[in-house]
Each structure stands twice: as C-alpha cells, then as structure tokens.
Length: 299
Image (cartoon, rainbow, N blue to C red; front, side, top):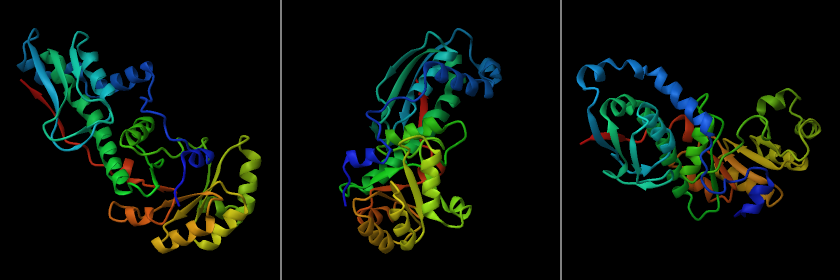
C-alpha cells in the first residue's frame, strides 16, 4: 500500500526538503580543524622534506568508480584551512551521480597545503560518498513500490549529522535523529513493563512532549495487533519474513505507518518493499557502507 508524503509526515518523520548541509559554519570549521590536527598536518615531515615552500600545484579530485557524491563542503574546507588562497572550482555538488574518471573539484594553490590536506579531505568525502552511494542503490532497488528507505542511529559517534546527511544525498530518508526526536519502544523496553504494549504506549504519551510520535517494535502478528489497539503511530516489523510483513501490512492498513527492519539487504529489499510496507530501515547504510573510491590527481 503506497503512502503519501502527508501520511509519512503525520508519523513525525519528515523527509528533508532539499539537501541542506547539516553543520553551521562554526561546526564545519571545528570538525575539519580537529581532523587536520589529528593528522598533525602542521608537521608533515614528508611534504616539508620533498616540496619547496613556494612551490605551487594544480590537482583535481576524481571519481574512480560510479557513485553519489557527499561531503564536498568538508573536503573544500580542509584545503582552505591549509591554504587560505587556494582556488577551488567545484564541478559536482553533493547528491550528484558520478562515473569513473569524473572530475569533482579542481584545485590550484600551494603544493604543501594541497598535499597535507589530501588525506583528511579524502577521508571525509570518501566515507560520506560511500554512504550516499549505498543508499542510492537501495533507493533504486525499491523504485515504484512506494516504500521509503530509512537510516538508523547506527552511526559513527560524532558523525551522526554528517552520515544522516549522506543518506539524504543518496535519496534516503532519516529516521529519528536522536533519542528525544520520537518514542521507539523496543523489546528491551517492553521487558521492563512485562511485555505490556498498551502500558508502554500509555506511559510514553504521558511522559513525552505533546504530539510526540510513538513507534512500537513488534516481532509477531499478535504484537502488531496489540500495538494497533494501543494507538501506535508507527509499527516496526522486526525481523519478520516477507510473508509476515505482508500479513502485518494488510492488518494495519492505513491505521499506522509500517516499518520493516532487520535482515534487509540489497538482495531482499525489493521483495520486502513489494509487501506494501511504508518504510524499510537499513542499519547497513551507515555502519557498513564501503568508501567510494576517489583520488586526488596532481598535474
């Protein structure tokens, strides 16, 4: 059963309107400066030993494989922090699809600054582009089914805003950003109330802010029935078979948003989507995405 954007919004998880970089200027400066300090770029002994201080160079960031770009503001900031006069021409924006040998940015500046910033810049853009690329593959796999691909909170500590941004760059949708964004009652929470879904939902609505959306993780059809009766906004179908997901979706109808989770792969995601489920959350988008192969080529 297809879900409209308004139905998705009613569940409290709104897709981003456009692709907006999630860091402020101050946050961008700080995270890049910390990465450059971690690499001790001020004491790059290899570059100091081999490159004259007044040497200038030109180079370009090039894709070595097909994928989706994300993280360009971070890469550009790395070069700017080590060479305030660097000239950057950006040919691809975040969210752009690239093929092998596609130039992404062209740079001209002091050779030492470009070389010292190279690894930090690549670390940012390769990691985030890898997430965007994997997300785009899942999105493509469920095309025309009405299902949306969501991320999870399985992110690198300190990088959540960036990794969830990369998911959006790949065409995915963000699940809750943090623990205060929505209620998600999982099996361990239910264990604390002896499995009483109605009580858990009641307490969540009493304690949470007015209008907070409540999601309940269900392992069985019987739990789905109880979650519906309790008035859950979103029902997570956890590690269910395709047959069980289809049965649960038909049972729920339009009374709540349904989310399939657990055991999702590129091999299985299409069949899951064809059950009519609203959302499919995939932890692998952020915890297992391979880096996109990008390189800095000097003229």
